[in-house]
Amino acid sequence: MSELYLAIDGGQSGTVAMVINVRGEIVGVGHGGPIRHHDETAAETFVRDAFRAAISAALHAVPEPVTSPEIAVCCLALTGSAGIARRVLSEFVTAEQTIVLDSDALAALASGTAGRGGIAIIAGTGTVAVAESTQHPEAGHVLVGGWGWALGDEGSGFWIAMEALKCAARATDHTAADTTLVAELPTALHEPDLRAVYNRMTGRSFDRAEIARLAPVVMRCAAEGDAAAAAILDRAAHCLADLTVATAEAAGFLDSDELVVVACGGILSADSPLVPRVRSLLATRLPAFAFVIPPFPPVIGAFYLALKADDLEVTEAIEARLREQFAVRPELRSKPQLLAKTPHRSTP
Image (tube, rainbow, N blue to C red):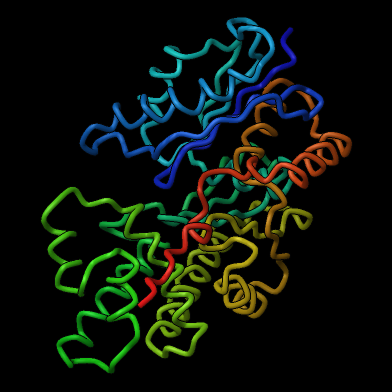
């Protein structure tokens, strides 16, 4: 039986793959591009390119060539294209067992609970929430949100950026109060003005991840006192709280020791100004739930779930070993975080 596990977390911001052994020692890590939903243009190409980059880099660090049956379990946590991913995976690696999660939010949940039950809310480029009980697996899980940018994703990085662009457009037309967003957003995109941003967005391929990386600009403007930017963050926090509360109301199967909300994604990273806003709202609306920022990215949750699929427990020794590695190896952080992509201001 192999002692190696392959965990893959793929979403709209990027993809990460990790090869980890049964003791929790990270053998290899690789990063790739974003995953697209199965019905989007070139979805299979996105998946194949992302897997090729991430998996090959992760396996490259393994001392010996890794082929079947040396990978015990591969766990895929994806925002979409699960069917495509399962098929494409076989082009790069063979595992004794492959599990494809219904939602990448399940990996996020596991990353904050060591594989136990609770609620997870992910706010990155998009948003989704999930609830699952390990005490009552027969209940399945509840999925709320995850409608994508066209129908939902309120409170996400993309939503925050689009709200800011709309606000800046209204200010440019003098139908809303002036805001520093009018100047700061084009500057972040290296464009001369908002009209040029509009032409760029409508005149070529619409890159959601690129737009979502404007969210940190909105956060900075809010921190510097811009009322319009602060109002957008307040609305985003209420949207994320609404999503979490709706999930909790649908998850009556959770046991008393599973009343925890795990907050993940670049918009809800530890240093995000959205975190205190959301935590405060949930303290009032869901007072019985603990609010947790997980110590590891969702890819580690996928590893935990791979262990469980192999009938193994996540021990304290495994958790401690992972903490030690993350403390000294910053490159182990998962997909590029939105808040790590803050565009710098142009100097005069």
